[in-house]
Image (tube, rainbow, N blue to C red; front, side):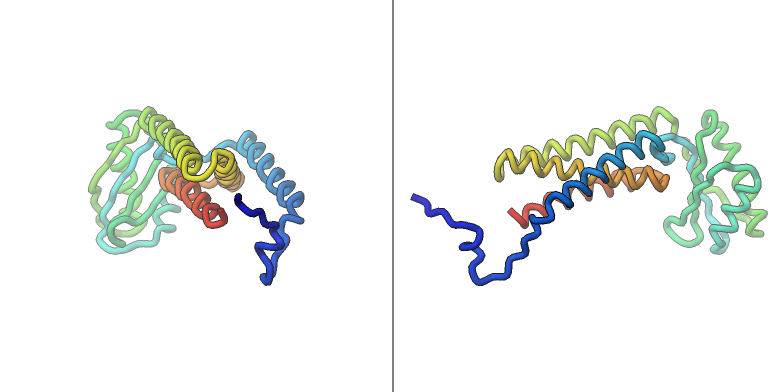
Length: 218
């Protein structure tokens, strides 16, 4: 017959931190953050990136590196709304992301205008490497796929923990995961941070890291 031990007996001779005496405070703060995150998401919504809304991606090669702020300001002054610029490959290569335009021909015209503004702002003779048009329907498919990936990850962890440990532990882990993801989404919504595929990958990392942290305590 298995012998039962109390917590005090198991921890005899070791310093024990009674952190559970703060459980009401912890649950209260956690519940407040969860409710606040849901309210913020409902009121402010999300700032979806071009990966989900669609748009035009223009890859440009510069003769020499130039300041991103200078090019961004020049594009905004020229009437381009919310241009997103970033380096890729090397400091001579930049990627410009623009909101959706009507059809692929519109993307070609947009690319020519963007190139003209950048050449004037940087006093260079830059060249367009590639122009890619992402339609809104493709963006909607990506959003649906990203949401499905998060749901599948949660269900997979529920099944794994249920078989590996206990189903009551699995339920607790999944609730904790959903709690972490919802609060993270609330912060993204509050600060109007753009959500793209990189953010979705980060949320997947949160889902993957949280149970690993909790397994160590089991």
